[in-house]
Amino acid sequence: MKKLYEFIKQAEKKKVAIGHFNVSDSVALRAIFESAHELKLPVIIGTSEGEADFLNSDIISAMVRKIREKNKFPIFLNSDHTHTMEGVKKAVAAGYDAIIFDGSKLSLEENIKQTKKAVQYIRSKSKTILVEGEIGYIGGSSQILKSLPAGAAIKPEDLTKPEDAVRFVKETGVDLLAPAVGNIHGIVMGIGVDGKLQSVNPKLDIERITAIKKAVKIPLVLHGGSGISDKDFAAAINAGISIIHINTEIRLAWKNALEKSLLENKDEVAPYKILKPSLEAVKSVVKSRLQLFNKLV
Image (cartoon, rainbow, N blue to C red; front, side):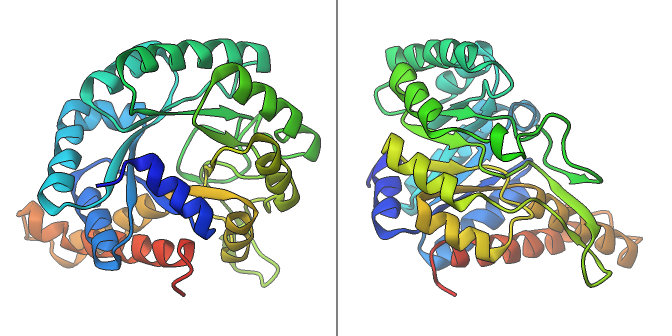
């Protein structure tokens, strides 16, 4: 089977994007795998430091690896938003396929310094683990928000500059880059022009994505995909995005389905029966996103 980087380069060439979905339990893991398997598309599973701690990084790594080997299917595991060297070391030891060292809240100079250390450590332990760096803070919570995250790069002057991206990539040696291009973590809910409650996330700066891609010439990753419009997704992929992260959307689908299941089955105590609607709800979201990212709709 091809390595993860080969699938990313293939997506880059075809101008499609690989879906990256975070998990906190085996329900979401199964839903994501089944959706990707049915569509015959590669997929990346992500765990933040909190999710990895809850699941146990060794266990989730073994589960993903077993699914990949048993089904001969391209499902990969990424250590999402790893902020410390301790987290990096845990992900390497657990056998993750990729690691994001997130120094986006730091100054550019310090971000470069810390990311370079992470890259050097990972390279000393493995020749196959992909390393991603991030420039520009986009918030740190995948949840429903009432307002934009404090300090998030939203104004044009705060977004990732192509020249900074070039310096960052050159000095750190990362394989993948996640820039701040108008994306944020979480879904900001507000009243839309039609008077209904809906996502009011900022629009992506497509020209900025195009300029950064042209400048760095390595695969770009879009974080904070939940709340972004289908139109912006399509434009971002055409501009050079090769991986798209989704988390809040599937968390919301999981929660809403669970709440309904509990209300409708008050006497049920079997978790596998209670959680079945959550499985189907997550599958529905993942499948629709994978189809969109791969131009199947």
